[in-house]
Image (cartoon, rainbow, N blue to C red):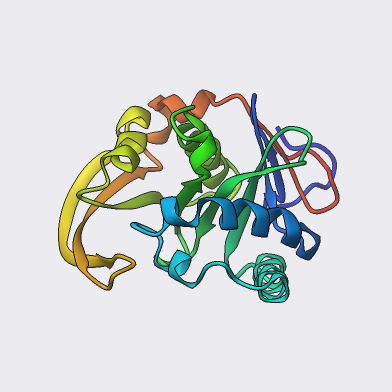
Length: 210
């Protein structure tokens, strides 16, 4: 439901257990604390984690870039927070790299919060945002074939395994892995689990758009 003159994109999404919102440079200390404490957990599938720990200033500069690209509509990278926004639970995004009518969802969750269903909750919410606010034709999730935990997320939400691409995902050691491509089409969305995801979404002015 659109209220007033609220406009896309969604800067803030609230789920039953989480806040998913556009990063702010002021989140630098929280993000650094989260990544520094679970870098070894992230390194196998997140090549950027090989550079950790990064100095706080580098982290702040990265967040400034994320915010700038978000504001310009170039890419949508979000932080995942606890309801009080006192802790970074992980990171996610509605990435535009697959084309103007497609969003690719990526995610990472802090080791301390693994096995709580947060990745599924986040992906569920952003799938609804992608189709109902961004009005895309397709949502994709790319996962290395060996990453069983991440593969479970699109499976639970009814995404279809469209195919496996050979040697498309590079791990932290530079080794290439086959990538499973999971997709959901706009025509499939109305009957999906995500179409009834319990969320609230707000624009840059804090106006509710979903």
